[in-house]
Length: 406
Length: 212
Image 1 (cartoon, rainbow over the protein chains, first blue to last red):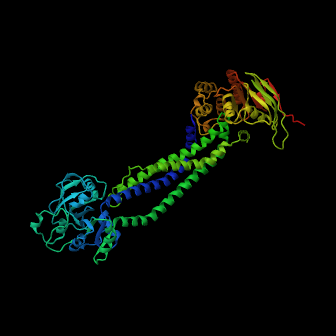
Image 2 (cartoon, rainbow over the protein chains, first blue to last red):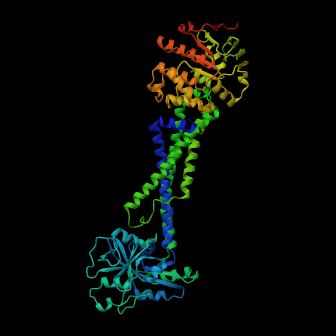
Image 3 (cartoon, each protein chain N blue to C red):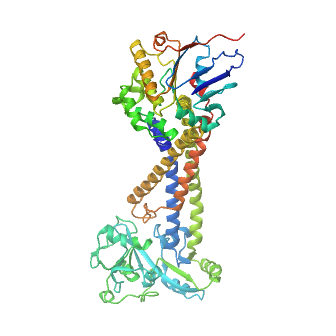
């Protein structure tokens, strides 16, 4: 027998009350855990996906939409731009490098993105098997695409029009997988990468078979004899001055718009922040109520237990031991609540991730633990101490003789 | 061994109690009789270190117990004084065995063997892992006796231990108390107004005369 066991016995003696208090606290903490996990990984992922991309140039529309579609591949593109115009922009002396992107198709919901080998270098990808594309209709698929669809090097498939699944198929020409990427933990895991030429030729009415055998451009813009379009252009600045001058310069041209990923994403988080703060506030209220619930439960049970406490004193318990006995009960309750809360939080995220394997949530992990979660446990225990302080003090002051003659 | 000297105690607005001088040795038995309100229970609480008298002293085994402060008094009580109340007051969240072990824990003793023997002698060994709500009144009272004896006290105080029991159980309980006190060579003091107990303990004092 010891004090911890004694407190535990008294908790178990009231299973419904104890369970309710634990669950209430756990709920509040689970919400905070999910928010913490998502915020941390989301921001991490968002900034990793945008590394090396200073500016996105595309068709006019919402700048946020342009960034979401071209960098994170979660929204629809704003439209296409004339390649000649894009080449014109890329010759600006403030620009160090550009990567053209061509989008519009998907396979089973995974986006097919036309680009060049610079895109692979940008994310410093490594291949699990195969090699980058060299001919039209050769593709490199991300790890998640390969895992989810069970594809490997040499497999062929037909893309569908549109960037989400269930549109009509382009059945004239099959894509052939030339390489599969290793898990990168970034957006390319979810992409099917190919040359811009592939994207063009899929949509052409007539097929020039000589072109199909010609190697595609591995850097810069592809060569072409006719006017062609691309979707957007990822831009790297040459120097900091570019950040000031370049967006203004491009936006003043009628048909193009420039959007900065870092600026647009901080704007997005600002918008989301209100919602996050609201949910956080709700969680804090739930936690405070659960603290109050624990306080009330202890305080009420003390009325019934004054006799028990007096009896403990007669068999040798000191005032300090009774104080610690009640305090331990509160702490035990909140400690368990914290553990259950963390568990529920991680489970919830796991269910979320399992159900949304494409899009913004994809790539989040439920088996990551943060230091902040340790703070949450401390915070919960602190609540337990606060909630049981007054009941414990009452237990400390129990007048034995008075109690026993009642 | 147990000495109670010139104890003076009064509740606010009430007249002070007239409490006897006591001088008892190991194995002594004493029955304290008196009407309701005569101060029987108050005296027992004073002897048990639960209620500090306004003056006078209680000496047990050479220690003036009210000279002890806070924890020291609680530990002394736990180790040397076993108290049995009119109602059993078993800790409701614990089993019978745990009720006895917690008495051990509070004073840092381990008398598991004694506990087992006591349970056997009190005839409740088969109730070890029972909870309070499954015990009969008589069984519960025997558990509270076992708990009072768990730390092998030098003084056993019983406050109306038979009041809520039928004749058969009352007889049993008083015999058990006497037998256990003998075995532990402890002083046994029983406070009661129960006529059934009178025949068992010869050494008696009656309190209740109030100072004028």
